[in-house]
Amino acid sequence: MEFQWHDIFAELWRTGLLYVLAFVVFRLMGKRSVSHMAPFDIAVVIIIGEAVAIGIEETTKSIFLPIVSIVTLGLLQFVLTWVNIKWRTLEQVSQGVATVLIDKGKIKHQNMQREHLSQSDLMISLREQGIDRIEDVETARLEPTGKVSVLPKTTALPVTAGEIGLPGGETLVHYLDRKFEEMRRGGG
Image 1 (cartoon, rainbow, N blue to C red):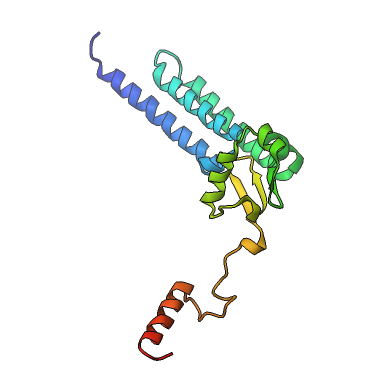
Image 2 (cartoon, rainbow, N blue to C red):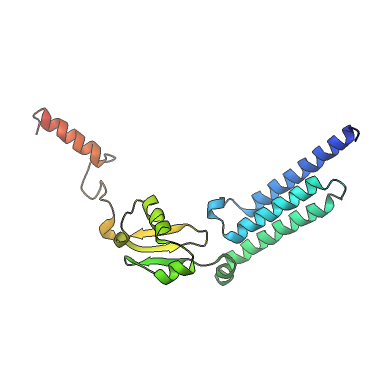
């Protein structure tokens, strides 16, 4: 096969055009990070990526077809997002609803099984949020994004500086260090 400069430039043009189009469509879809996307949102991103890849790889076919696919998917996703904002019921159908995993310190085993979530996975999510004991959780929910949100019981919340009357901005550690140093120097 003979090296052709016009083939290189044509491929650069196709790739650049599809890149810019994908960039614009993704920006129009919103600023949610992948960790905050519902599974369907991630699927749309993957499908758009595949349409871009096909448009780049299939140099013998018109670039118009991948462009139509990318724009159509972007518009459908934009419309679905707009409709979800307007009608909460449709959002629950298209995005899903949160599932209660822990209620008043008790694991909801049936919900855990339905969501295919093990107790060790749940404990990892709790520890990531600074909670070691299930009994310290008022409510834990598996959100449609796959993230576990946790509301600790008020008895398990840490004491704040304001609650114990510490001077503004001083942490308990700094306060105790300062008091210990005062005591060590005899300042009581």
